[in-house]
Length: 168
Image (cartoon, rainbow, N blue to C red; front, side):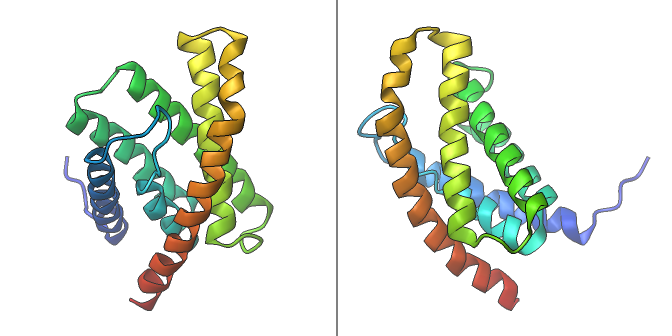
């Protein structure tokens, strides 16, 4: 059985590679507190969403989680479960936002929604899978504030990346 490599396959591969590079770069810097990562790889996901649609963005996000966990040695670990749950929550919210209106939000809007959903998904998964204690939710204000800041910054960068991708 032969598979034909399409232009879309190549696009997903190189955008996933770019997202993985940003993920590896992010891993090189220490996090001040658990849960405080800027999510640089999500810049690629948001730019792909705007330029190429939800399906392409979903492939990139999910491949990045899978391959990133293999590179980091965290596949099937609690960190992998949290990362995957955040990515799935983010993709669900982005899919809903795109289905409501394709042009209603900018890269910044999509990035903010994705960051907040990602953090919410991770907190929800942490509660269900690892720490079923109400005290976990006391972290929400701090973590959601970080998600707002990083979502805003990543959205601004994604806007620039979108302009580059659309110029090609």
